[in-house]
Structures are given as structure tokens and as C-alpha cells.
Amino acid sequence: MEAIILGLYACIVWLIFFKFKLLPWNTVSKVIVFTIPVVGMITLILLLNVFSPSSSNVLVVRNSVGIVSQVKGRVIEVPVTINQRVKKGDVLFRIDPTQYQATANASKAKLNLAKLRLAENQALVKSGAGNRFDLEKAEADYAELKEQLINAEYELAQTTMLAPSDGTVVHVQLRPGAYVAAFPIASVMTFLEDTPQIYALFNQNELHQIAVGNEAEFYLPSLPGQILKAKVESVILAEGQGQLGVSGNLPNTGLREIAANRFAVKLSLDDHKHQLVLPAGAVGDGAVYTDHLAFLHIIRKVMLRVSTKLNYIIPKLH
Image (cartoon, rainbow, N blue to C red; front, side, top):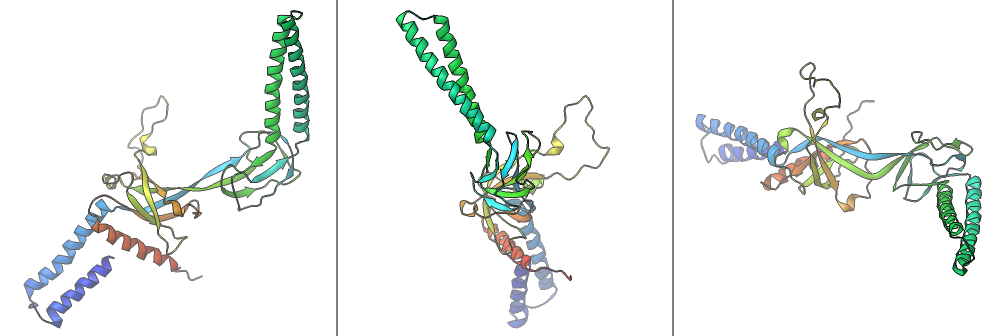
């Protein structure tokens, strides 16, 4: 964009001083002609960086969910493959339900018997021939068996593992015949959610004009030519260097070089872009348009659109 502006300015100078010779080309005019673009470009860049700040570190993050079995057993079906897109509720794998079905059936039979005994004790107590203690024991047994049936049916349902949300199964080593156990840290699959989280990293002095709700745009090299529109969801005024671990040690400062501070601005994509699956870990460029000096936003938007078109060019010799 700066090159376009300078080109237009050079064209105007050529028309005024050389084509139509409306003004003389002397020392004074030369100083003025060369001073205007220098001062103008410096002023423009400084204002852009304040009221339309840009970031060359726009990060795409997608939550990774480790799929862990809550019951143990032999796997009988794995209907998904690596990198397969699934919808919420789709089957990821099934465990042989025989033992869990048997447990649920047994619990249901015991519950029916307990219900019958409870009804008999209620009738006896009501007629005066029963023991109050026996009735209370029957009520407790019925309540306990009812909870056992709920747990048995829950474990039976866990033999079919379903997708927790829309996403992609990116790591599938599980095969029919494998044995899985209910071990919390042993994932049998890796599931990547579709919904992305977008973070734009800015220097500290670029944050003071950014506010929640500001319009934002960014592009990714993996999507050349496309501009993705978003809104500022929040400004995260914290980062790792501002955190001290719980210990008896004094804070360590000055013994090693501290990396440059960068703070994250979280962006939310417009609704009509939610169906677009952005690559997790992708890094691009973007800008936030504040509530001031709106005419500068046009310049920044043109700069972003020119830059994203350049992603079509792949300068490789091999």
C-alpha cells in the first residue's frame, strides 16, 4: 500500500513539475517534494500502528481431546479412520458389552425383587402385621439396588464411545481385538475439535486502543487470497513471565535474557465462517480496527488483501 501511495505521489509530482510545468523545479521545490513523502509516510505508519495495529503472529489453536475409555474390555468395532471428520454423537469405537449387559440384567432382576418385597412389607405394616424395621430395610435395599442399576446401565452405555463434538479423529491406533482399560491417562485416540480459537499476539504498547468488540481481520498462508473476518473477544492481560511458581525460592531476575513480552488478543470468527476448518497450529497475519481514525482502516485492509494474494506465489526451486 505504501508503494501505491508513493507511486501516486510521484505521478502527481511529474505532472505538476515536468508535464505541465505548473511550478518551477528549483531547490525549494525539491526540498518540499522530498520532505512531504518522508514526513507523510512516517506519520501514516505511526498512526496505523496505534489505531489499526497489526500482528504477524495470528495463531490458530484447536482443542485436542484424548479419548479415554471409562470401562475395560475387548474392542469389537472401530468405524473411524485417521483424519476422518465426525459429527457429535458419531460412534468412535465399541467394546464387547456382554459382561456389562449381564450385570445390568442382574441388577434389574434384583431391583424387581426388591420392589416386590417393599410392596409386601408396606402392606404388612399397613395392616399391623408387619415389622417397621423390616419395611425400612426393604426401602434401603430397594434404593441401593436402584442406584446399582443406574451405575450398571451407565457402564453398559460406556461400551460405545461417541464423539464429544464435531471434529476430526487425527490419531487412531485402536483396532478390533485390542483390549482397553479404564486408565485416565492412557488415550486410545486423539480427537481434534472443529471450533478454532484465534489469538493475535501484540506488543504491550499496541494494546491501549484495542477494545472488546473491535472489528478484526486476518489471513493464513494455507488459505491464499482469503480474508477471515472476526471480532475481538477479549484482551488477555497476562502471560507466562508474569507468573511465579509456589516455592521458597526468591524470584530470579536478570541472570538470563528475558524474551520480548507479547500479549494475546483473542478473536472470534464471524458465524458464517464457523464451517471453515482452520489448520491447527497455522500462523498468519492480521489487524485490529479500533474505534478511532476509521479512514486508516481502509489502508490497513488494502495491505492485508495485497499480502494474502502474495501467498499464491511459492518461491521454491525444488
